[in-house]
View 1: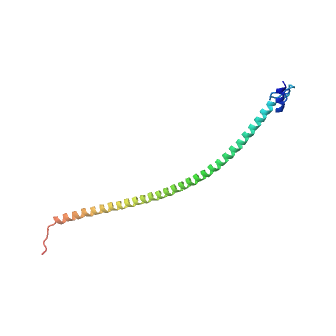
View 2: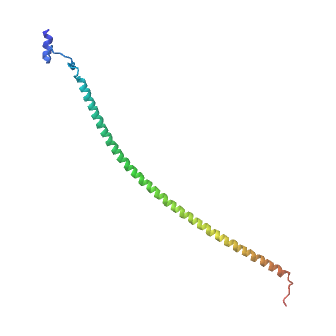
View 3: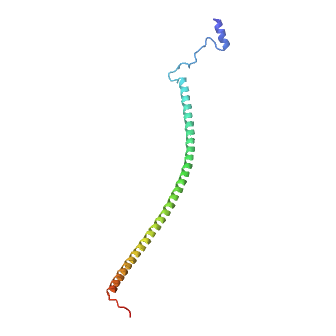
Length: 144
C-alpha cells in the first residue's frame, strides 16, 4: 500500500486527498455551482466576440457603401453625359426637320407658281390658236 502512495507523493498528490476534477458539491442549497460561472463567462466571451464581429461587419459595410457611392457618382456623370448628347442630337434632328419642312414649303410655293404660269401659258396658247384660226379663215389678200 505504501508503493502506490509513494508514487503519488512523487507526483505531488497525496493518496488520501484524491478528488476527481469536479467542483465540490454545494454545502448550502443557495450556493451556485462552479460550472455555472464558467458557462456565464463563456456566454460573455461569445457576446464580446459577436459584438466585435458586428463592429467588423459594420466597418466592412461602410467601406462597401463608400465604394458604391463612388460608382454611383460615376454612373450619374455618365448618364448626365448621355442625356446631354441625346438632347444635342434631338436639337440637331429638330433643326434638320425644320429645314426639310422649309424646303418642302418652298418647293410647294414654286410648284404653285409653275402651275399658275403653266395655266397662263395654256391660256396664251389657246388665244394664239384662235388667232391663227381667225387668220386662216380670212381671205388672203395678195400684196401687190
